Length: 264
Image (cartoon, rainbow, N blue to C red):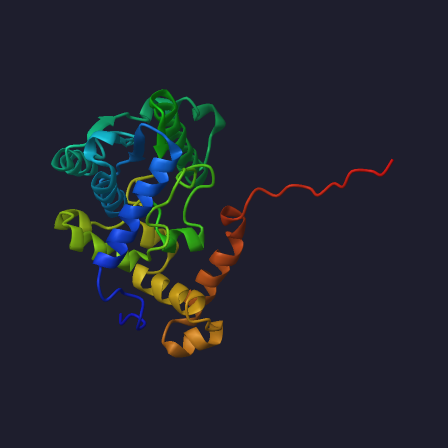
C-alpha cells in the first residue's frame, strides 16, 4: 500500500548517524565494558547489532542467540551466526528448551508460554550483562512499542532502545542502507515464540497498515475518522488505536501511590 508522505526518510544517513551517536554517547556515560543484545536472525536485531558495532567496535559487542529449540529454529540461528561473524562480534548460543520445560507443571497456554519465553530471554541477557559489566541493548522498533507488541519485563526490559523511534518501514529501509543481507530483510518478521508465528499474522494487519495508522495518528494528529477517510479499513484503524490505548501501561513508569507525610 502507499505510505503517508513523510513517513520515510529522504536520506537514511541521518537516522544512521543519530543512532550511532546515541549508542556511543550513552554507553560512554554509563562507564560499562560494552553491551549485549539478543540476536534472533531477524531484521531488528540485525540492524541494531550492525549499528552498535559501528558505534562501539565489535570487540565491545556481544550477541546471544536464544532459540527455544536450536534445531527447529536452525535457519534463524544460522542467519544470526553469519551476521555476527560478518561483523566480527562475539556471540554465543543458549537454548531455552530445557528451561521452558521446567514450567510444564503450570500448564501455560500458548500466549502465556510465549511471554514466559520472552522473559527468560531478558533474564539471560541480564545474567550475562551483570557478569561482564555490560548494558543490555533492546531491538524493538516504534511500531511494536506503540501498539504494545512486546512483553513487559521481557523483550521490553532493556537499558536502551536505539531504534525505538523508527517505524518498521524505516527499519527495512535503513537496513538496506547499511547493507543487512537481503535474505534477512525479506524474512517474515516473527518473535519466534511458537511454530508458524508471524508478527503480522498475530496482529491482524500488515506493517504498512500499522505504520500508516500510527504515523497519521501520532505525527499528523489525525482522528480515527480522518485515518479511515485517508484510506485504511475502519476495523483495522479501530483495532490499532485500541491496542495503543490498552498498552499504555507498558510504556509508562511504574505507578506509585502518592502518600504525603502527616503533619506533626
